[in-house]
Image (cartoon, rainbow, N blue to C red; front, side):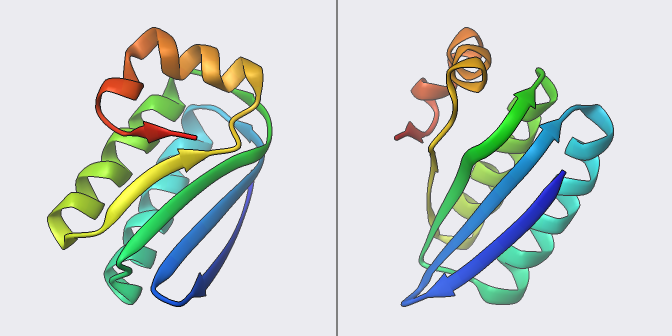
Length: 101
């Protein structure tokens, strides 16, 4: 898994590439949490367009990132999820908790 990010005009966009399983999810949650704390963005997009595979661990990444953003007053959404990742998120009902674009 690789993570790239960009901060522009108050929006933090974090792009995830590769596979997102349990070991990667633990690392990703820590990195995203630090980025949110360091930059305190007004908006944050978690971009999954580069994912090749995501298991249910990705749900925890989305939930924890959404909670961290909410605590900072940051608007959060997930974007670009490929079909397989969308199925995982839909099965968990994530769309009821945060926006999926």
